[in-house]
Length: 436
Image (tube, rainbow, N blue to C red; front, side, top):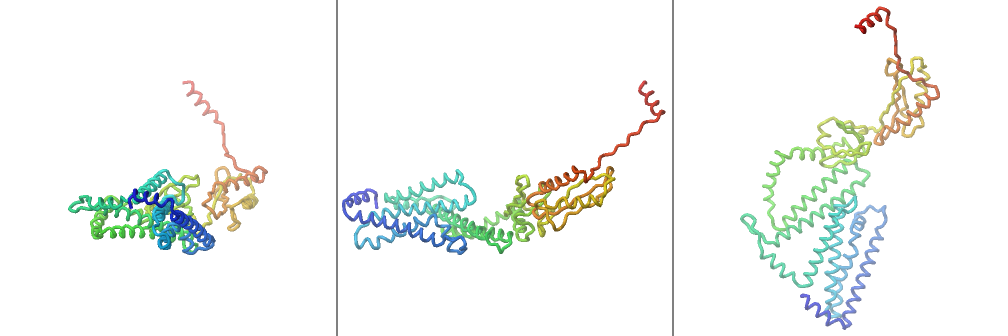
């Protein structure tokens, strides 16, 4: 339908009641679509409902309104044509509303895949603008009646690829199918991951494994399906598989090892998110376990990216693998003239009442050794949240110990120095040396 004919037909019908009827039908479709979308979203607004239907409505609520409006406008000619005859305005409104639905669907998929946990980046905003421009350009070309000419040009223009020639239309179809299916696969993988991470009955590591594997399977399936849709023989991938195997054997051992190590960590559950671990010179809380690396957040807030192979091949100290209760100790030296029984009783009572210090196991004091200046003691107590650090709780306990020292109930040892005068003969020798 060329643009000149469309404009002339619309101008010809502008003074006829048929235009007003079509405009009214479009207004009714918009109102009904908006009301239906609102009713559907309201019917599944209960947060306690974890059904698949509610998850779909929540995810697609952003695009539900234009999709319903486009569907109603597409059905409207079935009833309007027998009554009104030609419905040119409806046929123009359908691609316009449909383009809005396509743009919103594209925005939804992009944001759910690339900006699911954070703000939109400048690159994503720019890509959304380019995507909108391309969609509106396609609609303009459709309304101008140029689509048949463009498709004819693409079908008859070929690109030489080795011994074969491929039409531009096939290349474009392949690119579009791969991109669309990959986006759908990434969105589906993200949705499955969110749903799995919310299942309380599964272990954290098992949830992560299932999410990672489901996303990988969906991506591979999307690529294979898209390639088969455009007529590419999947047996040619055997050559690529051989090349990939050679690459893994020559220069990608570390990357492959890290990926395999990631799945091993998740499957054997030796580490879980929230564990306090120490690896080599790094220590902190595990915040993420990815297929290639693990993120370790130190108590100072600094995050360390550790390759998963490092967690498999070397020793790892896990403070909360099977028991989150860990011991914390502070050290002091008391004078030799102190009453150890009384000092022990005072020190054992000092951690009581301090936040995070457990009553069971009870705090204890140990005589570590007889030092040069006094009795060296260890005051040990227990906490159940090592991920929150030890420094603050040790400081609070030390403050209570200081109160005992300040009150004179505990006497600290001071370094003893034995100073002796030299005898007269030694003094004479040293005096003679000084004179010479």
